[in-house]
Image (cartoon, rainbow, N blue to C red; front, top):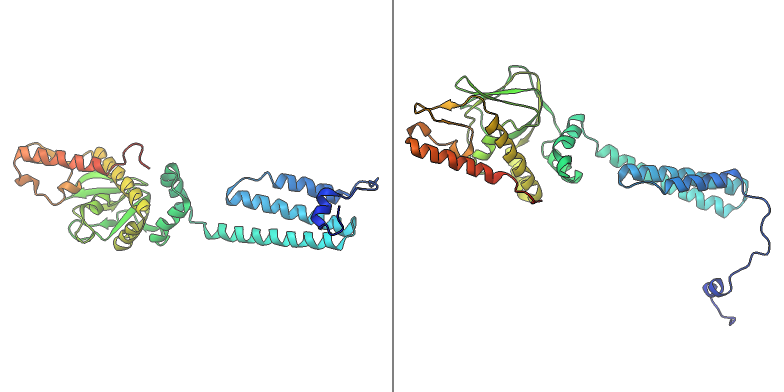
Amino acid sequence: MSGNSTPWDQLLFQPPICEGWKQNVEGAPYHLGNCILLLGYMGGSGIFGSIYIFSLLATGYICYTLWGWLDACGLDIFMWNILLVMACLLQLAHLIYRLRKDTFLEEFDLLYKTLCQPLQVPFEVYKEIVKCCEEQVLSLARDQNYALEGKTPINRLSLLLSGRVRVSQDGQFLHYVFPYQFLDSPEWESLRPSEEGTFQVTLTAETDCNYITWPRRKLYLLLAKDRYIARLFSAFLGYDISEKLYALNDKVFTKFGLRFDIRLPSLYHETLPSVPGPWRRWLMGLAVQSLALTLPRGGEG
């Protein structure tokens, strides 16, 4: 080999040969560090997996630091492992900060597990949805009205988290709203973004209730900006309205004996008693068809 060979050439083609192996084994800190690093590299993915990995890596490098200071007596070994320990601790601090930053109230965590996690909604998307409602949980006392018939404007969309809300019109009971159902999904679907309107029903809390609410304008801007969130809300609202449709146990009857759901969007602005009987049946069929179109089709993401 020529005299001008590089260190890499010497390492590959003329590797150094150990003249003698050490008779004694390294100290306990060295072997303990190896075992801890082995366990650390078995960590999983995600933020909790990363915390597990860097915690064990930091502990293992601390063992290496003790070994370099006490047994190997090498300043370079000691300094490199100190730097590695500091890097792991900084990474741990960053992960814990992210974990605290992403922590929501218990109600929001439960909401994610109930509605969004079964649909595999990314957590980053869920954070945008929660941010739109300002991460606030509002409350209704027993017998307190959420909306009054003909008076309360339709300027928000709310989701019930706990309790039970009674829906009525002209003092006549229509149905209940239960946890993780929208309080005003039919009203939301009945209006276009540029339209305004008032509730045609009264919603009253039968028990102490908690709910979250999205301001109408702010939510419309979010849905216009993010198509995935728009499709997600479309699926949620379609399913919610269908649940209300089939859960109604008391409906308004016309003098002809026909009954209809006054909260259906397609019937919201219609004066059905003035429509002849055959046309009334057609309008009801059209309402059900329009409702079916809002539901997600099988196989669509």
